[in-house]
Image (cartoon, rainbow, N blue to C red):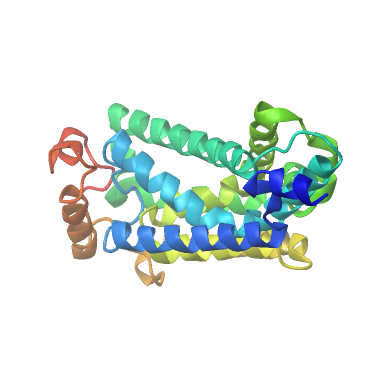
Length: 295
């Protein structure tokens, strides 16, 4: 038995709780990176997302920071099941493959949001300007996210996210590709559960560290805390109220950076000065018309 234990790959010998600690630590590191990269970039609703490479780097960092703590229970169960199966002679599946599949789905969500942003910029509908209908679009998006909290689809996806053991026992797939697929399936349920919360983030300012922290806390509360499934009605009422507030009196909303304000202009200038490595400083921002325009 001693020889068998020493022959095991190091990943098998790692305790499930250690994996969770490492995952939370990774989430903390990505929060630190997000704060360093995004500080002062809150240009409010309709923030210019810049070039694809720049946005993708920011988005993946944000998703890791926001989602890793709330996905920790699922990763804990996955690693424990994989170790138990390996102890019975079945191939061990590295846990990081599950996490990779999970984050890949959220990356696709970000790419879809970026494509929609590009489409709106290309069409250049004046109605989306904040001085015209922009605040109603932002408020309406938040209201829609609130109403989604009450749908059966939201309840079904949240139930899967809150029941990791039930999910893995029914959706487990063997092998490397199976682990990635299982992570992707769970990521799909997570997107189904939380896409409305991400819409709220985009509507209030996707580069806002404050709103990012608020949305991450709401996701964690709903997916991890006891009785978190009962928060859907609370969130629904809150989002509808905030959406109406943003549409009717945006200047009075605490923490909301107005697109036409000096703070928004300074944020845009900061984003122009921090492009992804290997690109010219101002190219992404000057080559695209920003959603947020000064009057």
